[in-house]
Every structure is written in structure tokens, then in C-alpha cells.
Length: 74
Image (cartoon, rainbow, N blue to C red):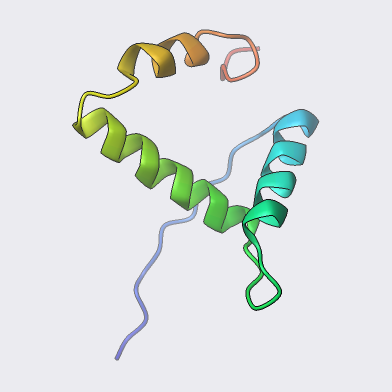
């Protein structure tokens, strides 16, 4: 069976966001399975998309995106 083709995305994140990713991956990991930061990002994307599809947390996410820590703008 051929491997699924995946798209690669490069983003710039702050040291604080990287630390959050690392901590989240560590907390989700178990002795049987280590979770990568990439897996955490994919999980977050799926969770946000699912919630938005259900109309949940839309305003919360918009408010978060308007904060300086999440913005793409410099």
C-alpha cells in the first residue's frame, strides 16, 4: 500500500509556543508511545476544525487569534 502523501507546512512560533507544544506532547505521551510535537499540532487542527464545524468556541478562537501571541503580524 503506498504511503499517504502529506503536505509540509513551516511556521514560525515563539519560544513560549514551542514550550507549550513540548509540554503537551510530553503530557500526552505514555511509556508505550511517545507523542511528537507534529502529532500535537495535527490533533489541535482536527479538534479546532471539528469544533468549528459544530459551531463551538468560534468567538473564543477569534478572540485568541486577536491576541498578540498568536498573530502572524510582527
